[in-house]
Length: 100
Image (cartoon, rainbow, N blue to C red; front, side, top):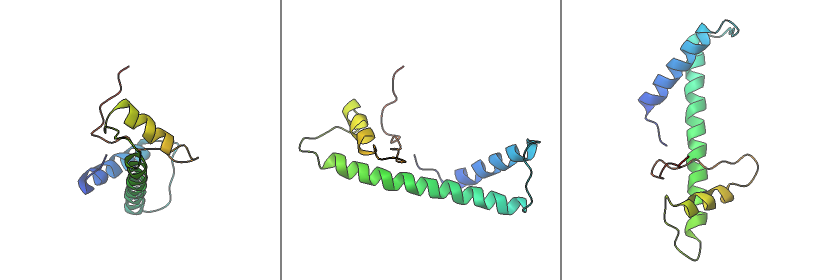
C-alpha cells in the first residue's frame, strides 16, 4: 500500500503524540527531530516494501503459466518468494481480502 506524503506526516504526528502521552517514554532530542526521524523510518520501510513487491512480481510473472493477481495462488506464490529470512511480501492493496 502506498501512502501519500500527507498521510506519512499525519502518522508521524500521531506517533509523536502517543510518545508524548506515554509516561514511560523519555527523549532528549527536539520533538521536531524525532518526528522527522519517524517520517524517514516510515518512508524507508515503504521503499523496502516496494522493492520486495517488484522482486516478487517479477518472480511470479516468470512462471510458465499465468497466475492471476489477487488469486489465492498469487498470494501463496508471493509468500513463498519471500521465504528468505527477514523478507515479507507486502500484500498489494488490489488483492482481495482474506476470508476468516
